[in-house]
View 1 (cartoon, rainbow, N blue to C red):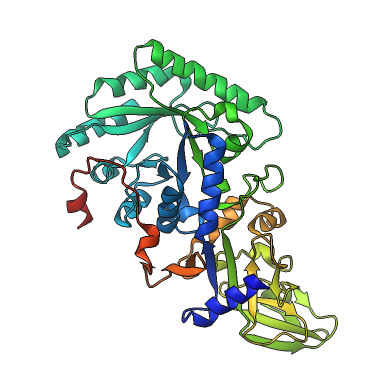
View 2 (cartoon, one colour):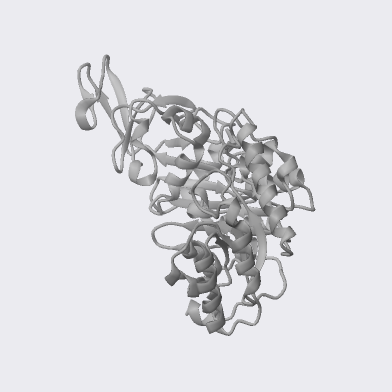
Length: 427
């Protein structure tokens, strides 16, 4: 009841659209600290905030994670990295994915670390750094493809690319990395095989006289399951948000919990008679007199059509099933006779309170992974409200992202950085 009263108070004060996501930053801090403790103080913690912080909001998530103990953050694209810099994130930022050649100057200007997998790209990047007059080398990470066959250099060519990086003074080999394909699989054989291939590649690079100052292999699943592969850096994504790397296989330990819930309000209730149908295609038909409520949230907000006639929400502490097809902007649910227009609807819960499904539960129901469900809620028209200490400290919606309490997001000092061109580029 306490949680519902808190949500009710927030929704009563909120003057925007009644459908919104609530993100509890205190729980994010707890999650980061618990994971940070799990990997130990000798291992750097990289908070992965790509895809708009897995649907939670990249800037406030990155800032809170760094305040809670994350050493650095990771994104997928240059644009994501630039947005964090413009949002006030000062921690080191690694761009995990491949980037276009025309993006290199912007990456350099905003002091983004890049992942490298091609010698020609290395030479071009070095030339671009040279043009800027940057005083210190740009950090790059060499990715070794040990079985994903996605991005990176094959192990046999890793030494050659490392030599190209080592030969140019404009770049510094800050780390060598790989990515596990099946760390959430009960069968560990492929993970151990990838690790062995990676170790051989790293040994060959070192045998060539090139320093490897950092090795990192672990995503969330590997961080939780394979402490022997933590090395000196881990990249933690989905579990930082309190969600399972695999909803059916890999649990998250206490006290890690989901940090986001999604809520709305009933805007209309209609009593249907037997035989009447609901929504597009009439895929649900009332078999008895029924009360159907309209909830202003749909697949354009991230609430997938996969929930049509399958998912459920929480209304007045009761499980209310989705009836008919989920629409772009609206969803219909069957409610009890005591429901009223204006009642709170919890669409996504935290798995601890009430009857609403969690993101992990919806992932199982929809036959997908929690990553896909969570990132769907990145749509800005679904306002995100950020809470800390029970207070509203930031809001993100179609109007903009605004911090109500800037002290809640003040970044720790991280020392000198060469951000040549950042100020000019930011303008």
